Length: 223
Image (cartoon, rainbow, N blue to C red; front, side, top):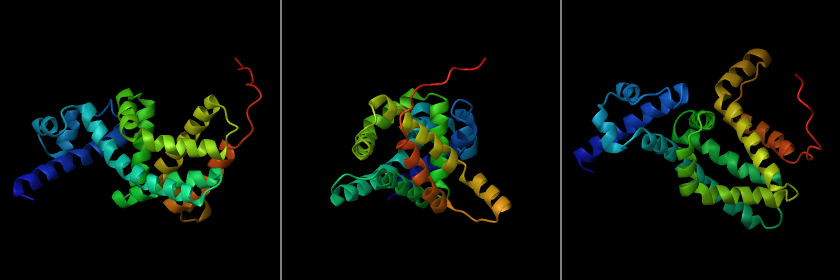
């Protein structure tokens, strides 16, 4: 690698690191390119050169996490297929939650940061990001969804949609806020917990919700 290419890579990495931190802490709309360049100690031309636009930078931040996550998820799903037969919901969920733990190898608290970013993306309706993720990684996510459907085929498609997103909301809260939850657990119960402990608790909880009976009807709203 030449010195020039090494310098370019360093600049790009600094921009992504700054954007990642600010997007997770402040959100996408509240994070300007000026804030990012100030934190990364680069000029705006560097952002334009490496990414072209703020939307492209947002996608690059997600791409870094999604590339690692889906690579691990493909391996877990392949191992599940090799076992044959109808999988359990718990086994399918494990294929997703274990790859989340690998994000902590990508960077410290990587899983928590990614979950916070994902929560921001939903809260701020980043439609371009959804299109980007589905176009590049949709085939892997679809395989995961198909495995869940195979494990619990009784669910109609609309109920599958809601339960997938309820599970995602639980993941965003529990893993995205795992540091805060760990501090509360330590203070209230003298219990030290890490990401592995949170994941171990999440799997049966999420599986129970996913397999719950269908709602008969919704209670009327009280005014």
